[in-house]
Length: 299
Image (cartoon, rainbow, N blue to C red; front, side, top):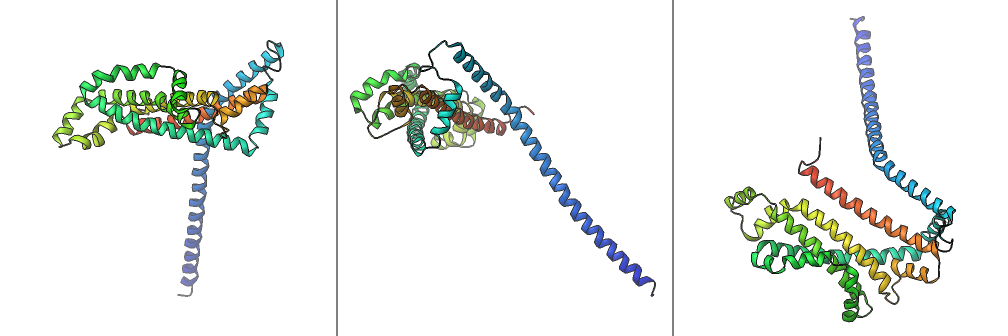
């Protein structure tokens, strides 16, 4: 008996040590998995980023070469260093971010109205054949029409105001949204529609639970194209329709042109480009998520 007690104590100590070792190993294994996950994410980000960075580097190098060649006077085409210096000073001011807020508010509001109108029109045209025969071609014609052509009419209707800009943004984006939805509905498999009928789907429920979800891939493409139209329309509107007291990106860029401040003009061009790329990334993320959900991506 006396000899067994130390052995049992030793066994308990050993099992306790094994337990602590197991917990340490589990924690260490978790850290290893986390580090590997972060490494994979970092590698994926780098694979996606380096082609874009390379393209930016090539553009900047060509820009610098053109500047050194003096193909245009420096007051018209500034060097990359001047522009990036101006851009750095610009983004540190509160007025710049107020301009960003005003422009993005206009863009989001106009695009939201265009999505609402385009969805209603697209669903109605796809649902009723006489309506499609009446205005189907008109929608396509409006989509191909340059947005800047609407500004003289918009100014006559609404004078120099926010409504004039919003009118052109909405009318520029709505046809693309409508056509995207119409195309998506047209390509819903007939088999799915028959299954919906068997399940008792009628009217609004049929659109909500079957037709609209099935048309989402094409609808997302229409939304993306509609955003491009609305963004271009907005930038043209802010350059042409200067609303008093509303210093948007376009208004400030026009002011820089009036003062022959080429570095500031190019800096604002870069800002508009970056905003456009950022929104495009969001649309691509939504499109990729939808494709993964539908099993349309490679393994």
